[in-house]
Image (cartoon, rainbow, N blue to C red):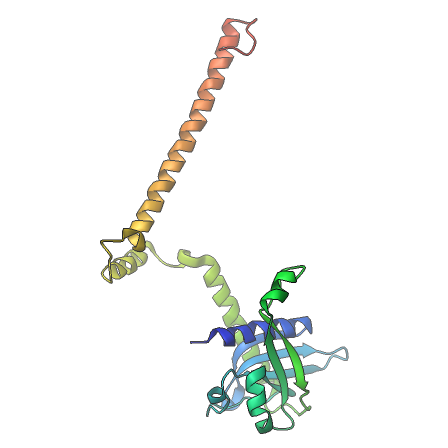
Length: 238
């Protein structure tokens, strides 16, 4: 499970890359068993060449010293770190690896902002990465990048469609299974079934009331028309 801080780093880095007109995707498997990079960006330069940038996000010292392979195979490679962690590990970072420092916006800055901020914090470049030749075949890397983009699009479409993807009988079985776990008879408002039934009944009552109001309005309109036909000189009276 990703921590809130990790998610904040991810969303801030995504916006950072987006503002540089780069295509970006998280958790990309590298060709030739080179591991999985946390974030990979693809940027086309004015001369038509492509720059690949790899970002590894670390939030704790244990995370930084993890035995997981660092997939620094790009033209430029960066660690993305909170300020506190950077101070603890900066001497251990290889000279050719760049460093982006994450800082969270304070509450006062959020309240005084003229518009809604798109990220929970911002990034600053503590050290620029040095250029290196791509460490894997570019065609293979492009293929892995596209596959990861498709994964994210598919995930977004599933979220958008929501429960439409699941047949009614499967939803019923899942709800029934959950009903057996911790049903609170003393606090029915805590139980999803009671809440669901209450909502359905409330919606049904509201719908019936709206229909009744509409039919009453139609009835009154018909009475008014009939009254005018029977009494042409009648003005606005039934």
